[in-house]
Length: 323
Image (cartoon, rainbow, N blue to C red; front, top):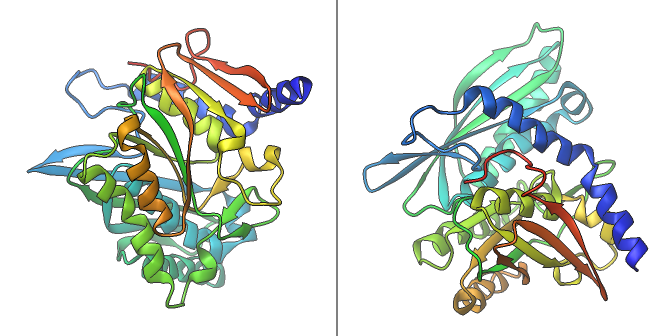
């Protein structure tokens, strides 16, 4: 098991998904705010103070190869992944806009239909955007506006808090990608209200003061997302792999590299953990305490009887957003 854990962590540590997160440091070095009171970089959304709450602003882009291969699903994902970012900040969506480049009107129509279907599924309007149907490539970018009363951030996990993973296991692999899809099959059915209510759990948890820190599980997977949260909060974490909610027949290696359509990590004080778990369990969403925050600035992992260090942030920064 020791060799197996070491090999697994080595593969994840050198994955393309995690390398892409490291690339963020280069962009942040150029765009880093000079005003210490400016909006912080490193969160799932920009949080802008507005009255008694916050406006939330985020965007996602999709490569030509993905848009060409799965145009409808690319459009649908444009809404879905942005909704997840808003929820991870304790917010609710207001509207989305898009920028689409397509080489034919037929390709554009499929992407736009996916975008509209996603908007209807999650109850958020497409408020406008930019469309070019005479391009030499097919690309899509979608931006979202949301609002939060109380924030969940990447900066507020604290030593002594537990780490909770909440993942909707009622899905399927979207082959050939490592995408666990618990959403698109419900598009156009009565179950879309379930998706909207599931998303609303996050702002409810924030408003009830049950958690202050969260991230949606991204392409970096569970460990990569936990590492991002740990870096921004200036903490370490110890995660037990066998405690991570996982589909019955999903291999550990594939699951740790998965990007779930509904997956979140939250930190919470130990006395609030059971209440947070009950919120997710009440909606048939798998949730469990998978680890604890500490002050080591390392992400240590236990699998079976073996423990190894996945990443030492004190030695090797990831995105460079340490406090």
